[in-house]
Image (cartoon, rainbow, N blue to C red; front, top):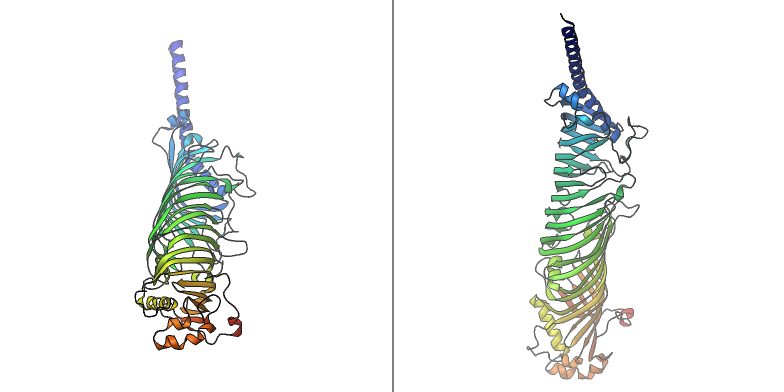
Length: 545
């Protein structure tokens, strides 16, 4: 054999041995990927959520490419598929509460070229049947820096996270917020579809979500952006988006009912979300009356996403044909288990019938125009809303007319007598004016002053109305334009003339002390013959004929 051939043969054998060694190295590297990915997945979940990780099954499916190709490209732009089943994470190993995370199944795709680098790139994660159990306040974990007292294999700065997940898709997820009182039912959000897409390090993630809201139950769809997460001050994390809230059943709340639909937009941070939108309830009603009245609103609110406190900027609303504005807040103060409500309501020109239809059983008994200004408070106490609600305000009704004939007939007779024409049937369907100051507490409406006027007559009253028992109890004075004899006809008119001077007081032709009792459906008007001496020397303040 010539020397040249020996050299060629030697070079060929070396190349063959090198190629075989390369194949063996590539094959060994390929087989190493699976246990390494498993180890890294468990380590990441354990350290990131400070939890004991249980995985029933984990499989790594390598791409259909040659080991040599993997070795030559170092796995760049080649993805391995990871599949897991029966995953649960118990925060700090606790077994007395449900696991922090629980998943029926997950799959993800990992860029093999980044497995031995930082950050590791996970192009897509798909989650199915995930449950997230959020512990009560005071027991919630802090994930700002991983497990306390534990370090990653490589320290990672905020600008260079250990893992970057480019896209997350979750189906049939349950978010459960556990109450402190274990006897109470947890609050559960059913998230049907959730999609998160990362645009890069330090950039907000885009999201789309469709879920069922628990209270009031209804369907929410939202699209927007979230983040980047600010670990040192989570409340400063930005968010924003648009939403629709459909077919929300208000009947789950005490005292009200109806189906709500709402659309709007929100922006800000977790600690200060500024939202604006509109909402409508075509069949809004109070359960105590059961009469539906359409309600629509245009709102602007500031919500503290960390504690749920809500501040209402002036909300413009329409109830039936009545426009009004509301401002105030729903706040939970330190030491209270519930949120308190404090609202200021202004109704400059309302339809009285709308309010009466909403608030009383049966059809409204009066119509007219109403001015109303009141403060509404619902203290953070247990019990029904109607038992807790407090009102403090004033009102004025103009052009009022009673729709029940028996009441209106009595008002017409009062006007005839007040004008000294008791037989004049032409004085009919007279309109009434009313104004007063009121307070509501413990379901009793107390009027410190109440004035009621029709042509020829003016009434000054003070008293109360028990809304629960439907009991009226008022005392006051009745001033008539006519003298007492002129309120009668025939021989009585002549017989009473001598006593006219005794009843003509305070600039009125006749001054009588009266009472109004009975119920809202059947009030009784009469003379207050048993009035005390103190009553006779007093009159409601702040009213003038």
